[in-house]
Each structure stands twice: as C-alpha cells, then as structure tokens.
Image (cartoon, rainbow, N blue to C red; front, side, top):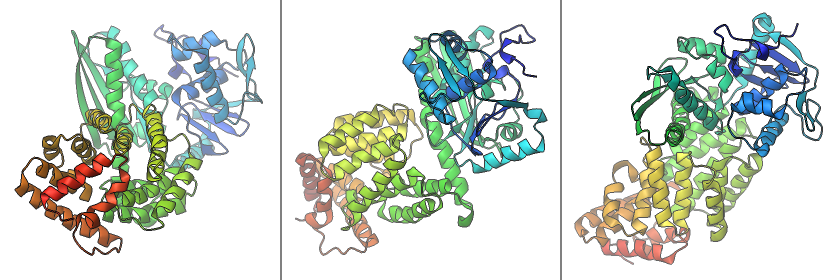
Length: 548
C-alpha cells in the first residue's frame, strides 16, 4: 500500500520537510531512485543530478496520484523564495533529461497546462529496509561505478544558543550544497539526505556506509550580537582524518550578504582540497589499481608545478587516464594544457600546437559545459593569435566561475597575456583571498601581472621561493631587480634564469647555441599581444646583463 508521506504530521507537531519521508526505492522504466542513499540509477549506472532536481523528482513521485501545482512545488521545494517560471521550467527540463524523458515526449513527467505537473509512468516502490540482499548488492555495484569523489554536507550546527537563529546555519548549509553541486568533479549528496541527519550524533563511518560517501563537510555557526563566527571542516569519511578546516569571522551588517560571502569562501576551496586528497591517496596506490579519475588528479598535481620536466611526466599519466576512459573530457584538456606550457615556455616542436588544438577540441566535444575546458579554449584562440576571440572566451567563462578560485586564476592569466594586466592582477588577488592556502601558481601569475604593470618592487616580494616555477618567473624577477637598479641581485637571478632555460630546452631535446636574449627569451614573445610586454621583459634582461 502506498503511503502519502507529505501528508503526515511529524511527532513533534512540525510540518514535514523533504528529508522526513520514509526510505524508499522507486523503480520506473529503466530507472531506480533511492531516497535513502540519494541515488538515481539509469540502466544500472549512477546519474549525477543537482540536489534541487533530485528533490523535484522525489516530490513528483511521492505525489504521483495527482497533479502537483506550480505553487505547491515552489512552497515545498523553494520554501517561499522568489523563483521565476523560467527557473522552474529549467529544473523540470533537467529532471526529465536525467530520467530519459523530454518536454516533447512527456512519457514520465506530464505538463498539465494551467494546472501543474504529474508523474504518470508506472512506478514500483519498495521500502529500503525490505529491499533485501538484492537491493544491497545493487547499491554496492553503483558505489563501485562512481568515479568522482562523493561529498555530503551535514547541517551546520547552530551554536548561538537561540533556536530562532537556526535559519542562518541551515541557509549556509543549503547554499553550500547548491554551490558545490555545480562542480562536475564532485558527486554531492542532496539536501534532503543531508538534513535527515540534522541533530543526530555524527559517526563518520556510519555516514560513509549509509550514504556511500568519501568525504564529509561539517560546520558550526555562532552568532553573538552583531558578529558571526562560522567554522567548516572537511573530513575523510573512511579514516576520520581532517583534510581541511577554516574559521570565518564577520560583522553582520547585511545578514544575507554575509551568508553569500561565507558560502562563497567555503565553496571556493573545498573542491580543490578534495582533489588534492584524492591525488595524495592515488600516489600511494600501485599504478595498475588506479582509475582514470585518479590518474588525472595525479597528473594535475604533477603538472601544477608548470616546469618542463613536470609537464612531460604529467603526459604519461594523462595518456593512461584517457586509455582507461576515452570519453572522460578533463584528461584531454589537461593533456592539451601540457602542450600549452611548451608554447608559453618557447620550447614547442612543430607538432606541439596542432596536438594542443586537437586535444582541446576533443575535450570540448565531450563536455561543453565544464568551465575549466571552456577556459582552456580561450588559450587555443590565444595560441592562434585570435586575440579578440580569446578575450571574449575568457570573459565569458569568468562570468560562470565566480566561486571557482583556481579557474578564476587561469582566466585572469589569459587576460594578462592579451594585455589586461591590471584586470589580471585584481582577479588573482581575489582568487588568493578566496583560497588563503593557495598553491604557488597564484603568486606565479600575480608576479607576472605586477611586472607588466611596472610594479617592480611588488614583483620582488611576490616571485620568491616556490613561486619561481619556471624560467618565466626567473626572467621577470631578474628584470624587476634590473629596472629597480639592483644590479647585483639582477645578475644573480639572471644566472638562475639561464640555468633554468638550459634545463627546459634539454627536457625537449633542444640545443642552445648561445646564451643570448634572442636564443633564451625570444620564444616568449609570441604569447603576449602587446609589444610593450616584450619590450619591458627584454629590456629588463638586457639591464641584468644578458647580451643580444
């Protein structure tokens, strides 16, 4: 017998929330939707859907005996927020697409014009507790198929001592879930499964087993007067190890603006920390046990040093990722990027640019929505000297990545190469604020932007230590010292520049006939649209002592 969960009243008298339904598995056509483990499987394989889309499917399934009105959906899923008809239509389109339906076919979700929507396909439902060993076996199979790291965001704990303040901690939790779900590199458990765990003791192992997740995000909110402190931490669900933690203190002038800012700060760093931890795990595995995703992350960790030796090592790992999963888009993009580094360092061979373009187009053909891939397309235009198209592409993708610190950085770097050094500097500084534990590549980009803005003193404070990733950084630093008249430091840094250039040429089996400006630095010239960039760079090296 079917139970209409939404019409129940909870034991404590409150209205039921989305997460208050019984744990059920719904089966229809070639789909299975598990409300306990938050799984949608199509043809036995997991399908990633946004949390709100999953909740929409659950609501329509629970109320499939009748037509559900637009207002009812808005009240129950958006909880009173102002939502346009276009936004609702987009979520319905996503829900249909996820289960293999469409607005034209309407085999499963029917639009009843002027009345609302109804789930009309034949549905078999079974409580998870009664699903038996067969259902358990299917869940395990789905978990094994899941390539991307999975994350659940537990409801942030209200530590204010005032139950009325729970809306603020719940709001941050919901926003973090929604924003994290935008990242293609993560599988994010939806709101209803997360909030079903609210006010319950946290057992990481139990949560990992129940939801099939690898990582848990926890947090707390303490509001005192006009100040709020939010803590957040990322934990490995299997081992209980803390991967990342941060604390945020803010003045509460505009509560919703603060909520947005805190969400943005947390989400900006979480995907990167998860990927770093997965890459570290993968580095401890035997190569023959790695999956395509792990090969890709290992390669990315190697490539991120942006040295010629590192990009060569990353290629082997990326080629293995592609061999394991030829339809996985990102490895093609990162492999293309290794050839881009050769172009930027002026150590490319005749087949470098064609190979870069081929791989970039393949990545885009497999996933035209991934902002990292769209960002990389801007560099393909840049390499071809199509500067206006490159700028449009970078600006287009920048609009889609306001919370993705790493992609903001590389969009900003592309803008610097086409002559927008001031904008690049501002974007990079914002990315650094979003990710205070940023890798050295952030300072590598910032130092170059400062150099082309003639802020040479700042360059000497930025391009230090690990930020000297390759010869470009050494060249900018030597030039900055020279432009400041600090010729002794310029000369010593120039020696390091020459040494690094020889290493880069040797890594590609290229010979260096003489240590001159044209031989060692001439290969950089084509990456900059503005001739003034080359003049600033070459003049600095001349002053440092590099002959023509």
